[in-house]
Structures are given as C-alpha cells and as structure tokens.
Image (cartoon, rainbow, N blue to C red; front, side):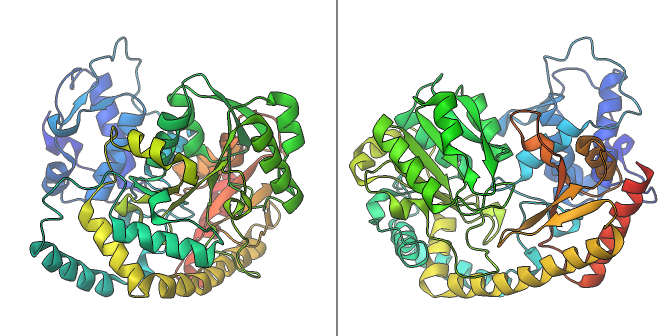
Length: 482
C-alpha cells in the first residue's frame, strides 16, 4: 500500500488522526493490507505525509488498542496476524470504548500528544504552553555536560532510581505532603503503571482480590485487571471511599487502591474518619493500601490536604506520585514510597524489572528540584489553573447551563459536569468526540453500570477565556444535535 493513499484531506472538518485511523481500517477491511505486513514507523510516515508525529502516533495507538496493529518494539509495527474474518468497517466511527482506550493509552503518565494535537477538554495533560522550556533546555545542557565527566550514565544504573532524585523526592514529600521517609524508601519507576507493577510483583499474586473505587481511575483499573488481580468495586460518596461497604463486600481483600486527596474522577477528598477506618482495616487484615496522590499539587481553596501515608503508623500504605501532570507526560517518571520494613523486598523485586527509565531524565528532574524551579513552577501552575478552570466554568454557565451542571471541588485538573437531561453520557461523549471534543463519560469509569452519568472536562490547556468559550460552544452545538 502506497503511503500516498493514506494522505488525509486537510480541508475536511474531521481530525487528521481520525482520517488516518480510518484509512488504515478501510485498507485492512478491503484486503489492501494483509495480516503480518509491516507498516511505516511513526517517524517515517509523519515525514512522508508532512504531519506532526503526535498525529500519526495517535492513529497508531488507536489501531494498536483495537487489535488492528501489533507493536513489536524494535521490530516495528505490523498488521496483527490474529485478524480473521474481519467485518466490513468502511465508513464506521470508532465506538466510545475506543475513545476510553485511547485516553488510557495516552493519558496520565504514559505519553501525550504534541501541542498541535491537544483536543478541547482533553484530560491528563498539564498546560504545555506554560512549561519553562528555556530553563529546561539550559538544565539539559548542564546535565549532559556533567554526565560527560562521569561514568554514571555509562554504567548499570541503580534499578531503584538515581539517588539524588530519590533524595529530592523524599525531601519534597516531607515538606509538602507530611511524609517522613528516607530516600531508600523511594523507588523511581517508568510511569504510574510501573509503580503498580512493582507493587504487584513484590506484594501480590495473580488472583488476589482488592478494593477499587467506583467510579475510579480508569488507567489503574485496566492495568490491574490485565495483570490478573480481581477488583471489588467500593462506592464513592461525598466523603470518598465508603470503607464500611468495602468491608462488607470483601473484608479479607489483600489490597485497596485509593485516591484520597482528590478522588479520581469525582474530585472529593477522603474524610479523616474514613482515612482512619481504612488504615485500621488494613492493619487488622494485613492488607496493603496503594495511595495514588492524584492531582494533590493543584488545590485552589486552602492548603493541600496531608497524604494518607502521613497517618500510617503500621507500615501498610504504599504512596505513589508522578511528574506527568506537574511537568510533562513525556518524562515517563513516577515514584513509589514503600514502608521501611519492605525496602529489602522491593529491592529484590526491582532488580528483576525493566528499571527506572532514562538516567538523563532523572538527572534533569533532580537538578530542576534542587535549584528551586520545581516549587516555583507548582506555585505558578496553581494560579494559572485556577484561572483556566474559571474560564471553563463561566463558559459552561453561559452556554450550556440547560444541559450540564458543574460540580466544583477544591482542586484538580478537570471538572465533572452532570447531565440535567436523562441522556446516556456514553452516547453524548461519543458524539462529542466525533465532533472534535475530547470529553470523557463518567459511566466509563465505573466498575458497575449503576449510578448517574456525567462528562469529565479537562481545562488546563484553555489559555484564554475566548478559547474556553469557543470550545464550549462547539460542545454545546454537538450536544444539541445529539
């Protein structure tokens, strides 16, 4: 198949990556691309079609997530050999589960699109226009020069991560999150899923049952299910995870995965009585609590709440954080803080895994933190996000108040809007996505189908009130037609 057959129509009112995605699907359905055939790399196809790499990568990730493509690492990407009896697909639109898989593939800490590919309301991305690039480039040059004078980058790195970065993380958590830990308890991982994998390899076994917030963080849920863990849905209300229901449904669960500071996706905080109740349950049943400190840095009313880990006296909490939302997703850097008495076990386990990622990225982040840029950047982003959230909320109130009702929480990088009508949020989200609005349906984040629907709307990349208003009008037009 000639790459020119894939060339999108720049004049069409349809996202370029979606055109590319459908051209590949049609070619497979029509027999122009056979199972096992290698397709061009992202870089080469982007160059040949004069497209941004992020645009091509989006289409490829959609095709991989749906099983049409098979990514084989250094061996390249091929049309999946397992495709059999493929139905006619020409002219179809991707279903909503495909949207959710794309979000999972490109969301919280596993990469993201380029600025030209950011869609209105897209979640999981920081304000890329506000990142201090000049400072970062200067530190990158400094880090490269420093590595030239040492053998650190040439030797086998510590699988637990670059020691100065681990020290910087331990210091930051002690000041900002109330967590007292040594750098030996800190393990740097390749993204949030790397932290979950390290926990599961060290403390859990396939088939173990655990509590999971319902609704809860989609990326974590799908990863845990894929590695063979059984999840018991525990409902979330105004006080966060309902521990009493969790005990009733699975008192002897081996673990619980929670987002206590800013629950994902509802935005509520786990109340102090429930925090203590959760820790008591974990202590009595020798269970583990995985605390994902989701969006904790961005709170717009009052001071950030202390971490659940800061209350842990029995060594049952494993604390995870990521640099994806505070810096940028392309770093692929997260971290895990383990109980002091488990450091040896995690040391043994981490040596058998893929490691902590690029040493250069870790050196740069460590320098960024040590020189005070990290704390200054966080302060700047809190002010910026408060303004950008206001842009979105005011636009919704003016243009879509008859359809959507916003439920504002104290912090976070998205807002939740409930539906004033009885429409299916998945159907509305699918229509919005086809119209170029990257909203997420709340129902997709539920383990059980029961519960009110809603739309999750990211706001971090609305640079002006006008851009937010334009996006909301576009969304309102799509919802009115749907």
